[in-house]
Image 1 (cartoon, rainbow, N blue to C red):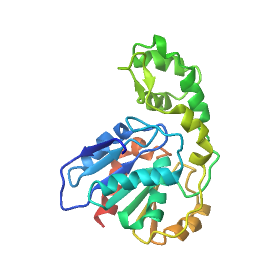
Image 2: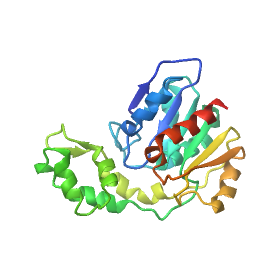
Image 3: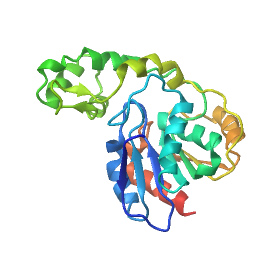
Image 4: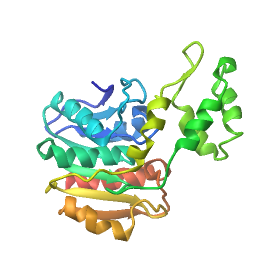
Length: 254
C-alpha cells in the first residue's frame, strides 16, 4: 500500500485523491491539501519509488494506476482524483482502467502522449552528490548547484533528501526511475474511455498540453474541459497556488 497522508475529516463529500509528479511526494501538496481539506477528506499519496512508499522495479502507468485504485478502495471505493505530470498520467490510466473508482478527474499539465522531456540528467545530478559529508540541506544544495542551475529545481529535489538517515539518503528509487524513464515519459495506449467530468488544467506558459493533443484527450475523455492558468508553467500548483486551488474547487463544486 502506498504511504497516504490524510488531511481533513470525513464528510458527506467523497474523498479527494492527489497524485504527485516525478521526484515529488505527498509533502509537496501539504498546503493545498490543507486548504481543500476544509470541505472534504484529502488523500495525498507518495507514489511508488517515492517518499515513504514501497520501492519496486516496475514503474509502468498500469502499476501506478493499480496503486491508486488500492488506496481508493481502502477509503470508500470512489474518489475525485487529481494528478500532476507523472501523477496525471497515472490518474488518467486509473480512470480508463477502472472508471467506477473515479467520479471527477483533474489532470494537471500533462496529456496522454509520449514526451521527449527525459529527466535522467536530474538523476545523474542527485547521484553525484556525496551524501557522506552532508550535514545540512545547504551542503547538498551547494553540490547540486554544480550541475543544476535552477535554484527552484534544486529546492524541489532536496525535499526528497532524508537528512535523518545515517548517512543521508534520497527518498527516491533512482535506479528504478532511471530504468523506467522511457515508460515514465511515454504513454501506452489504453482501451476504453472515461465518461465522467474531466478537467485538463494547464499552465499558460507550459508546452506539455498543446492544441494537437486535444483530439486524443477527447477520444479518451469525451466530457473533458480545458483551462489554463495565466503566468504559470509546468509547476502550476506551486507557481500559482491560489489560482490553482480556485480552479480545482470550482470544478469539484460544479
